[in-house]
Image (cartoon, rainbow, N blue to C red; front, side, top):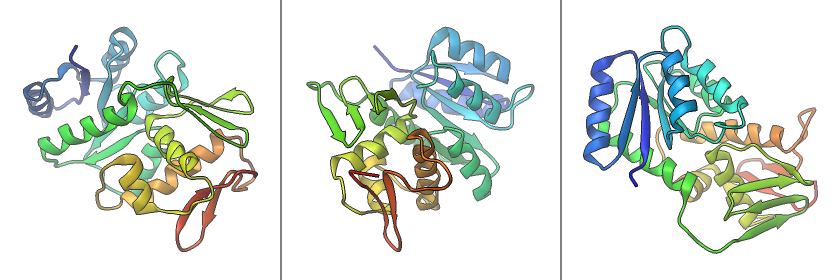
Length: 231
C-alpha cells in the first residue's frame, strides 16, 4: 500500500508542484489549503506524514503542530515544516514544538521527496524481531516504537525517538552533532547542527529533567552529547 502524504499550503502552485513530484515517486497525496482543512484531514485520514507550510490562513503551521502533538490519537504523525521564513529562531521554534524537519523556500522538489523518504524511514523502519534497549530507567521497544522512563510512556516525535535510540545504543559514548545527524537522521543541511540542540532540549524535558539539569543526556563540551547510565 502506498504511503499517504498530506501537503498543506495556501499557495496552490506549490501544492501542485509537491504533489506532482510525490506522486511520480509512488506516494499517494492529500492536499489542504488552510489550517482547519489540514486538521480535519490529519484526524480523519491519518496520513503517514504531513508537509506543512507555516504561514497559513485561519490556523498557522505552528498552532497545527502544537495541536497535533498534544492529541494522543495523532501525536506520532511526522511533520516536515515548509516556509519562506528562514531565520534560525523560526527553525528552532518549529523543532522545539515537535516538527521532524524544516525546509526553507524556495526549495528543490526533489529535496522535498528525499526529506519525506528520510523521515518515513526513521518513523516506520523495517520489519524486524522485537528488540529492547535499556539504559538505567529508560527502556525502548524498537519493534513497538515505544520508549518509557521509570515505566512512564514517553511521547516522542520520530526524530526524538531516533536520536534517543542512537544514544541508548552506545551508552557513555560521546557523539558529535554531525555524527548524530549522520547516524540517526541520515542527512544534513546548513544549520542542521544547531537543530540537534533543540531536539536534545525537548528530549530532556520529556525525560522529566527540570531546572536546567542535564539528567541522562549529558553535554560533552566541545564535542556534543552522550547518554549516561545513571543521572
